[in-house]
Length: 235
Image (cartoon, one colour):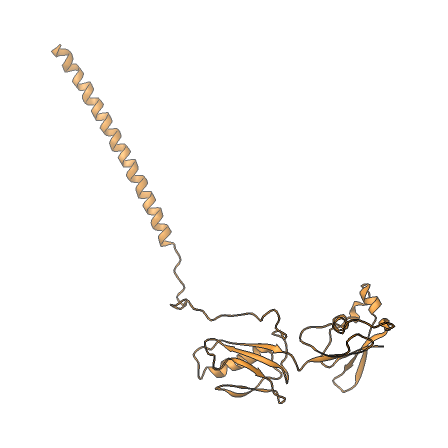
């Protein structure tokens, strides 16, 4: 009996050693996985983009607002006398406001006095105001919008429902002009409509418009875009 027990003890001892070795190996695997996970997490944190250096601390950025959808004059519109402008200077309500363009083509802006507005586009006038405001305001943000178009117009005369003068606030074709004037009256000679245009040399030019042909998709070149001072004549 004692002899048999002495033989079994080495077997038990070997089993304990194998079990302990397996536990050590498993622990090493867990430590290795934890280390990989920590390294990946560190990389994600390190790769997180930082906030831009030039962003203000309070998060406020000067707005760059587009012209409202119903703004009469776009940015390529040339300002003229009698137009009404909206001048917006960011965070400076004293300089901002609505101003009319006087018959001499000038406007009056607080701090700056009289400025020439006629002949400039809204963006050109905004740049002019911005340059002059730098003497009073740090990095001024200026926006100019034409709110009322009164310097550009065209006339529709003859056999239409509502003849008269119309503001040329946006690109307008002959068809657009006829629609604005309420359409043709009865017995109007719609194939003999024409645009009377004053030329740079002072002469006048007749530009034909055949309504029946245009609405059929023919002679589309006659459906011209009107210019300031044009007169659409419907005989």
